[in-house]
Length: 191
Image 1 (cartoon, rainbow, N blue to C red):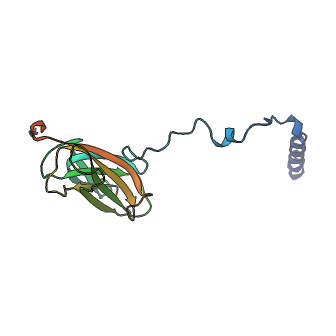
Image 2 (spheres, one colour; image 1 turned 90 degrees about the vertical axis):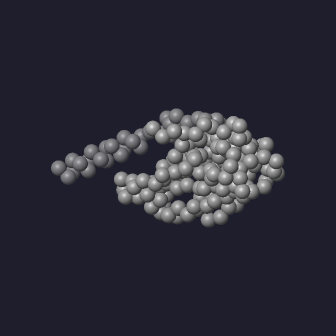
Image 3 (cartoon, rainbow, N blue to C red; image 1 turned 45 degrees about the vertical axis):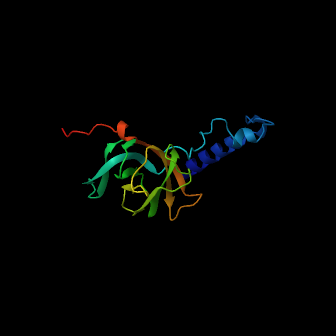
């Protein structure tokens, strides 16, 4: 039996070696860029849009609730998600859920005026940071206006992740509007 198996494997090896290089289907003189820079490549990452990648979801909200998750972890749930807030002193929340991560880090939010506020676009008006531990799957940033109250206009929030804010830590940008007092949304009545 052992001799028969050895004979069969020898025949299989020899029959495979009978193929010559001339028989292989090769494509001749194809430019290397056709293989390296394919036209089907995904679109480039947009740092001027809400962050993706490690964020499963990220939303602006009027508040948050904390619930005990099925793994006995604290889960942060957005309350009244919106991108339009009334003028005043209330904070703006950014609530996020993360994909699994293998080390701790910080998530930073840096808020700048974009339109109609009467400040320079690079004037920092609010910022916050949250330390994300290894077991954390959700979190939030709480943005209070630096001048005491939000002025009507459009704001953008740069979302950074890492140990500190730098050019390489930018993950994306969130935008929200502070409505003028006359445009404030009607109060929400509980059900």
